[in-house]
View 1 (spheres, helix red, strand yellow):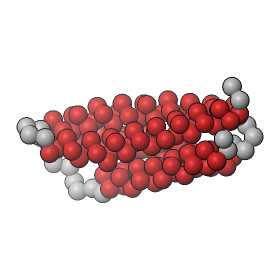
View 2: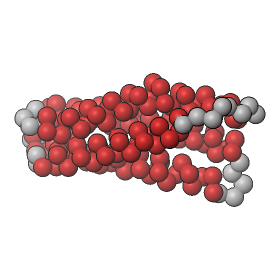
View 3: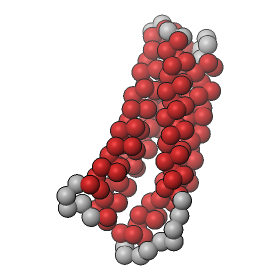
Length: 145
């Protein structure tokens, strides 16, 4: 595979990744609560499942993208800084934000009322930053083709 093809593959992965995050985080997440018959516990249960799956898929996409980029070597740094920033956000989400939000969801689902928290807004902000980094990184990779 040529370097150009590797960068094209990396850019495609990055754009797919950003689309997955946008579709889940900014569409599915709040739309499910507008469906008839979806209660808060059911919506939270679905959300836990979907965000857990998305997180695992994101790690696979990150590894795939980095593999393509590192195999291509020349010029990789132009898009890599943005991908490293997106990866940093993913690490924070995986090891801090998602577990904290998961604990809150479990508390709600068991009938408890957790203290008010801005954790959800922090997660949304992290998703916005991650998508911005992915799109910028994808554009930089696309320029290398």
